[in-house]
Image 1: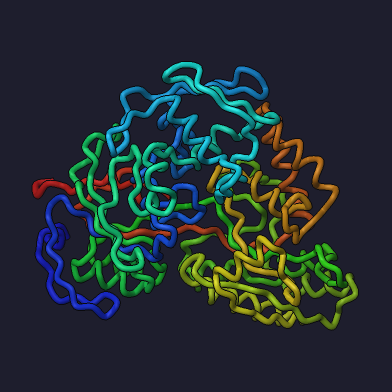
Image 2: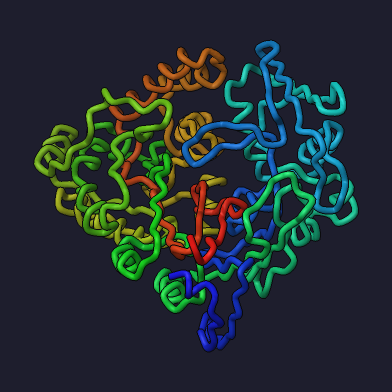
Length: 506
């Protein structure tokens, strides 16, 4: 398929526009499913179109398997329960030529913690109390309480260049980002839908032979596949399971990326009215009622594994002793009868599509299975902005539950998900007071062995109480030209500097 890479392609239509694409040996053409809504704003929660990892560096790095490794910090140690010391990488410069050092980090953190500006990522770093440079390349961070996850948290905080931020301001900096990564954005296209990146030769991170990256946002999975088959694209993200056999038959490489994230339905038990969902027997019945195996096999082509607890194998806290919720409609009916709901009851769930390919069908299958045991489930489609507003404000009047991800990949640790599904969440929707002491203890336990057991205990308790309707994991698939060596993957499939076009003789 390497001939696809080297030919000029004319007359392809994306978004109804006739375009001509001329590829060079150094240009990677990527099909991406969603727009970078906030451009390259470094402190946003959205993935920024998969570009932020190419533009910015953080002090630490979590790879696709959740392994923590150095980035701009070469090493770190815990001096006391609340004090960490990070030794920084030397001879690093930003894309504008400014040097990176401990004072840079201090200035960047001052910007991040500016009390006049609330950045979305601020809550993720909530344990940090103070910081100071102890030398040109040594940084001290003090936390308000022992924080076993600090080094992982710092993987979510891109380092910005303070002078450029002061000159540009947040909005312009997001459009014209300055980082220490191997690429920089030179243009965004209309609505940020066609970003172009070029190699920054002064970056400390080496690249292969890809000096330019052209991203085209194509929301429809089938259109992304068409772009690959026609030779217009070299690499596409979020491949639908139905398209995998065709892509492999056409000679493309398909890579499945596992993830510790879990798609679920959150139950609203924090409410002023009476609800069957406050009864654990009802929640267990619903988990037994949904044929999750059929969802995985028939809707998702076996790409995604079934989830029965708030952790998956490979994630710290996964508990093999937790009994899975087998598909058993008769057991589900018996649990409903035991709870006093033999005749069932109606529910309304708010869901939004786009979390992963096929999720709309997943929710429809779920509602069908719940209806089979007498729980008539109405699905209310909501937009993502409306969903986010409700989630952060707790505005769920008339809604009994909603689609939500247990997003464990950010830290490769379930602590953050536990806290969201608890009384401690700022807009709590599920609350079990008995869980709080263990969740709080796990958040400050510095002994990794003791903490892992705590997490397993929490997982077991959540599973036994059926704290959510767990469905499947967020595994995804990418496809790429066989003439590319990809190297490592991120969860979104993009470690651009490790990608290399093979020579014709390879």
